Length: 412
Image (cartoon, rainbow, N blue to C red; front, side, top):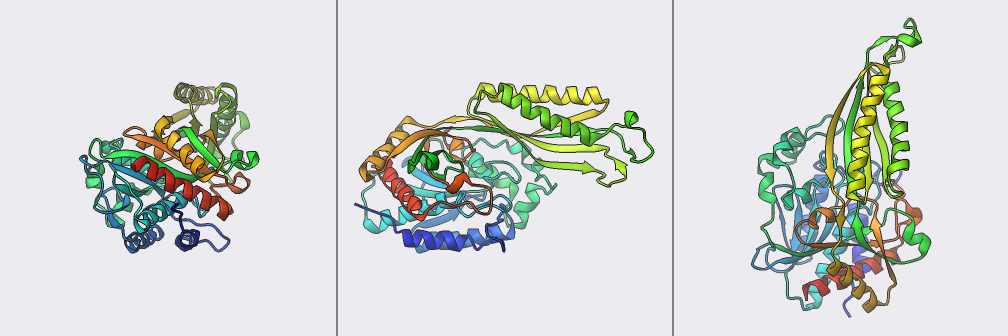
C-alpha cells in the first residue's frame, strides 16, 4: 500500500517555515511580500524536484501536476492544495500543511506509479488569509472574483493590492486570465489543521468536513469631532472612539443572541484619529468580522450589525461610514468527497468523524465549481493563528496518508 514519506514532508514543512520566520517562533509571510515571493520560488523548485510540472497563473496561484499541465476541460483534474501565506505572527502549519502534503502525495503517486485515471494537481492559492481580499487566488481561479474591484482592494494599513502585485512582478490587469475552464476540475480536497479543539478533545484523528462557514468583513468608522481633551465638557464631546467601542460590545451581544450558537464575531483592527492623548478622538474605525455556517443567519447578522452601527451613531450625535470589505458564503462539502475521505480512513484503519469548519478556506470557492471537501487533523490545544500553532507529527503523517488515498480514490 502506498504511503507518504514523513521525513520528506517534515523537512519541507520545516524549510518553508524559515521564510518569514520570527525570532520567538512562528512566521509572518503575507502574500506578495518579499518573504512570500522567496517562499514561492522555493516551492516551485520543490515541485520540479519532485518530478512534477510547475507553473504560476496570473493571480499568483502556484501549481504542480503529475504528467502534463492540468486544467484542460477534456481531462478534468483531481486537485488538492491550500496556501503558503500566513497571518502576522502565525504558525507554520496553517495552509502550508495542505500544500506540502499535497505535493508529497503527488510525488508518492508518481514514484510508486500508482494507477490513476484522471490528472492530479496541487495548488498553493494566493492571499488566502485576506490581507487584500480573502481567498483571492481561489476566487480568481473559480471565476468568483469581482474584477471591477481589484483596483480598489487594499490592506487594512492602506497598501493597495495592485501595488503589491506589481512589486512582486505580477500584472493585476491579467487576474481574470486565472479563471479555469468550465469542467476543468473533477474534484478538490484540502488537508488542514482543524484550528480548534474538537478533534483533540474527542481523541479522533481525522475530521471529515461537511460544511464551511461564510465570512463577512466590514470597515465601520464613527466620525465625530476633535476637541481639546481637557477643556471640552464631557456632555459636549462627540467621541468617535467611544462610539466604536460601544458598537463592538453590542455587536458581540447581537451575535450571542441571534447567531444560533454557531456564529462568531471579532474586532481585530481598531484605529483612532488623531490618536494623541490630549485630543478627543474625531474618528474611531474598526474592522468587524462575522462568521457562521448558515447563510440566512449570517446575512441576518450582517443586516442587524449595519442597523446597530447607525443606531449607535445617531444616539451619540455623530456620523458613521460603513464599507463592506469582503464576503464569502458558507459552503456545503460534496457527499462524494466526504465518502472518498471516509473510505480512505477505512482502508488505513483510522477513525474519523464529520464536523463543520469554523474557519474559511479556499475549498468553499472550489465547492462552487466542483465536488469539494476537506480533511482535518487535530491542532494541539486547538491553537492556530498564533506562533505556537502545531500538530503532532504522527497526526500529520496520518492526515497526509488519508489525503494520498483520497486522491487515488477520486482519480480512479
